[in-house]
Length: 223
Image (cartoon, rainbow, N blue to C red):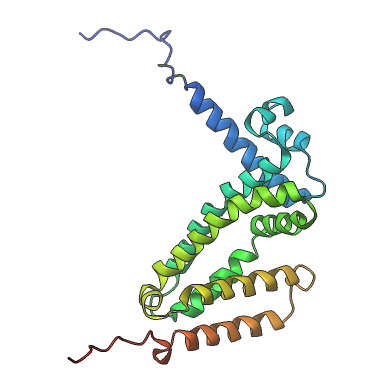
């Protein structure tokens, strides 16, 4: 007969986290709390006291991870951007395969810029105009982020990226156009001009990537 297991035996305890794991967990909580506070209160009303409270840590603990408020804000944006890119790619991939890829990419880009998290991040970029410390902190994040955006564009449109000499410039133009319209949309959220702008941008991208815009092939010289 099998021996009975004592009901008093306690379940095995999960392994204790290392100091590094605990530190990374606290950092993530602080970054998530920063984004949450930005969305709900905005940059002007965000304080490190409020962020620490939402993260469940002391303000002193916050400053063991980030030397300044500007560094915290930039790190939060850096933490947010990959998640937005992942969601964008998932959204593009979820659309019917037969649909015009350019139209889908533009529509999903507009949808991304309507997200409160990204609008909160844009608010930081506006605030950086008069905050040199924040400007420097965001500049260190923005360069790699723009590179990631161009990488995503090349993954979505590999043939166009290879064939059209102005591909990167056109991608930059599209990003700035949608971002600018999204900022204006904060005051005019239901302006029908936005839809017309997106349609015009889609037509422009189709024209820019049309066969006549292809990189001229090099002809073989005759001896």
